[in-house]
Structures are given as C-alpha cells and as structure tokens.
Image (tube, rainbow, N blue to C red):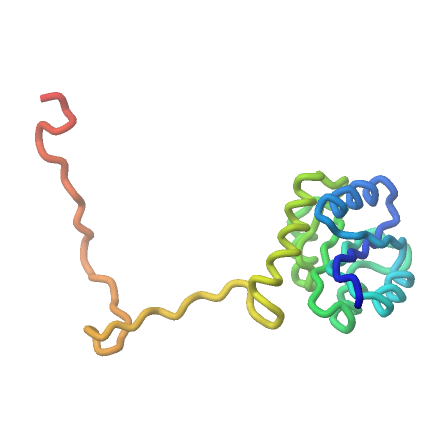
Length: 169
C-alpha cells in the first residue's frame, strides 16, 4: 500500500528547501526532494503524493509543467508554488494555473505550516470534484408562494434613544 503521507518538494534552492522540509516534518509528512522537473516527473509516476511543493525557479521548466503533469498523475493532490516574487500578479498567475496556494520565499515557518495544514484539510472538506465555496440556495418561503422574499423598499427604521437615558439627566 502506498504511503499517502509523502510530499514531493521540487526546489533547487538549498536554504528554502531546508525550511520547507522542517515545516513538512512538523506536519507529519515525509518529504521526497528533487531539483528539476524531469526528476519530478519520474517520481510522480512512481509514487502517490499527498501534496507537491514546487519552486518557480527551476532550471529545466517551471511550476506550470508540474501542474500539467499533476492533472494526469496527482489524483487531486494540491500543488503549492514556492514563489520568489512577492507580487499579487504572480500569486494570481499561480492560482489561475491551478495551484492550491503560494509560499513566498524565503519561507516563514509559521505561514508555511498554515498553508500545508490547509492543503491537508481542505480537500477532505470539499472532496474531489466539488467546489471549494458553494453558496446555499436561497430559502423559499411558503408564505410568499414559494418565492424568495424581497427586502422592503423605503427608508430603514432607525431606533431612537429615549430622552434622559445615558445622558445623565
């Protein structure tokens, strides 16, 4: 039976990798490291991973290649991008490509652990193939013929304070 507590770390920056490994171990995951996309592809087809952490500074490709591979072989495992650019546009680019979240490098241990725990728990809460945020259907009321009641038009009533209360006199 495959160990589902494996985490693949694709990072060629030694200091960042060490900080990530420490956080993964605190979260009870067993990290397997590699330094390029080619090694990662081999590992992705050999093992089952609970999550993948991938640097945006790889010599042979970028995190988007891992996200493309992940759609084929990761079985809904979240991919977290280790970003060396702390900009809103790079964050949105990673999310649009399918990443679960990003960790800005050099990684802050507390923030890294929070993101890892989120990646471990959120997929179980929403399940594969379900949307993360589902808005409830509006409630239908029998008194309104099955229609959703609309708010009243006109000015809202503002409660007034009685004279002498709270004014000392």
